[in-house]
Amino acid sequence: MGIKTGAFLTLCCLMWHDGFATSDADNNAGTISSQTINLSYVSHPVVETVLLPLIRSAYQNIRVEVKFTAVETERGLRLLQDGMVDGDVARTGQVLAKLDNVITVAKLAELKLELHCRPGVQCKLNDLTDPEVLLFFPESARTLKELDLQITAQKYHLRDWSQLIAMYDAGKVDRFLWISSSLDCASPVANTTVVAIPTAPIDLYHVIHASKLALLEPLKSAINNELELLIAGRCH
Image (cartoon, rainbow, N blue to C red):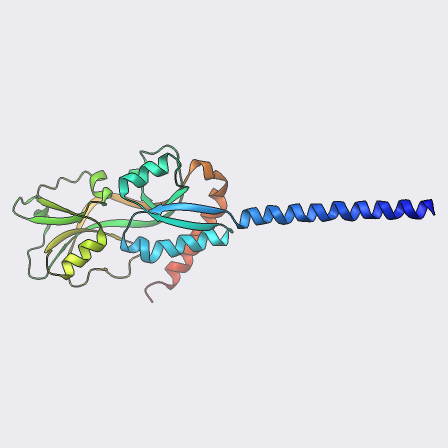
């Protein structure tokens, strides 16, 4: 009788231990799957229409949820450097060279700087240095500052890219500077004459704060996979 009782108690102990082990494993899995990352981003058509969904999908593929926060360019850099956000959707190499708490995860695209003009308006590179010419561009276009372009034309700063498009469509803008990307299928601003502006290479990267280093390798793979799918099916 004592042997049977002892065996029963041993079995119960084993079942009790296994139950807690399973529960701990489930809890750990839940911690991974319920992790939420806060990413900042600066408004631009390619960011909002292409990169936000691509980045969200990449994080979901490694079981991480994403919260996106729109920021002004300079404030976003301070938040990123100080770890107040976990990463940024897309930043240029020129900007990242000045940050030391940020990890580059994957290259997303190449950027090109362009001069856009309304049809019928003179449109040439010399316009950039003509003091009689008025050029519009968003205050958020930090890339223009980092490239240190010698623009001596009159400059009018707008709030963001969406305001620029709206003002052009309303007939209030004749010439403006635009940053396009290798992920664009067509210009978001229709009916313009376009002149490419020669610059140093401008590469766009997804970045995370150094505190999120553990995400680097799985996230890099997930983003590259999403980019392959995007490029294979885009513009068709």
